[in-house]
Amino acid sequence: MGLCGRAWARCGGPRLPGGPGVLWALALGRAFPRPCRTGGWETPGTARYGLWAAAAAGGGVPAPRGVRGLRSSNPFTRRQEEEWRRRNRSALAYIAAAAVGMVGMSYAAVPLYRLYCQATGLGGTTGAGHSSEQIESMEPVRDRVIRVTFNADVHSSIQWNFKPQQSEIYVVPGETALAFYKAKNPTDKPIIGISTYNVIPFEAGQYFNKIQCFCFEEQRLNPQEEVDMPVFFYIDPEFAEDPKMAKVDLITLSYTFFEAKEGQKLALPGYQ
Amino acid sequence: MSTAMNFGSKSFKPRPPDKGAFPLDHFGECSAFKERFMECLRHSGYESGACRQRAMAYLECRMERQLMANEPLEKLGFKDLIDEKSEAKPEKL
Image (cartoon, rainbow over all chains, first blue to last red; front, side):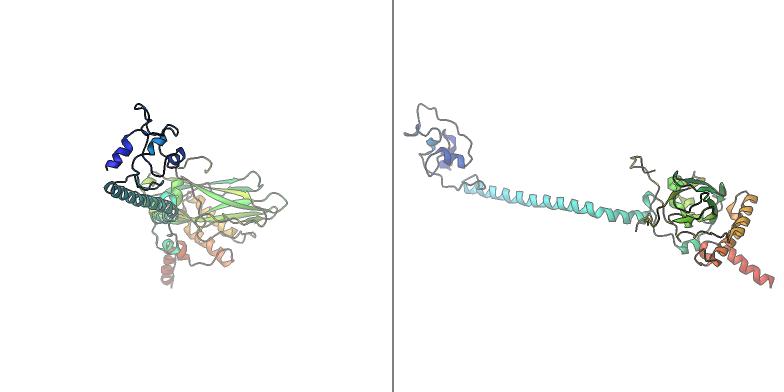
């Protein structure tokens, strides 16, 4: 301890074993110690080497000093330092594990959220409950009459005449309903169309179930041909129990036809 | 509908139909049934519940002519009409 104090408190830096030299001091990465100015040099012969040389004399401190070595030579503080280092390493391990865990969770979140949405029906996604057993057993809710209006659109590049055959119908949730659209190809070459649909308001779209329709598949119309296109749908009885749908009594079903390229296969929307 | 950057609001997600798409009735084989159905709708003030009998007839026509997959009508939501029919038959007899 005594040696320790002497080595540090004095000017000229610590007394190092292995002789003086600027290179030796630099190799250890030590900061410049205070220069000696107490009436001349501390030890004879150090004037030639400068500040660092003052470290030459004096008892060497036999503590190992590498870059990762312990700073103290005192056994008690060394133990404490070792303890600190061990704790630092374990803290680092915990933090690294937490970081890896976060990355893993962000990858796992996608399928988990999808499962959660399907179970709770959040965000307009549908569960797996649209089976024929449900249609068979559902009861119509007679006190909620909903007006369903129909809209038909064509994309500008397709030359079909497409329109609904009824402007509106009145349905109740839980009862299946049939509606018709009409499409005509006034040109003299066959045209293939494919359609998609939209339900407004968006939130009502999750209750609007189509049993069968003419959308998402290519429909080919020969020249001068006119066809009836039916839509067979029902509104889920749970519509009547949703508080968000309490004010909704108008649903608009809108179909839009696009021209399809020959042999093009489109993927059906939804989770597959 | 998906052009605006409104990530918070719900968007519409189209779903495929449960039983797929109807094949097109190119030869108008069921047009008569469709006309009767549309006539019924016009007379009843476009009330769907009043014309379910004729809707059922149209779907039966489609099934007979292979324009629709054969399916028992109960599964298409016409269970009450089938029950009425079966009740009416023993009464007639």
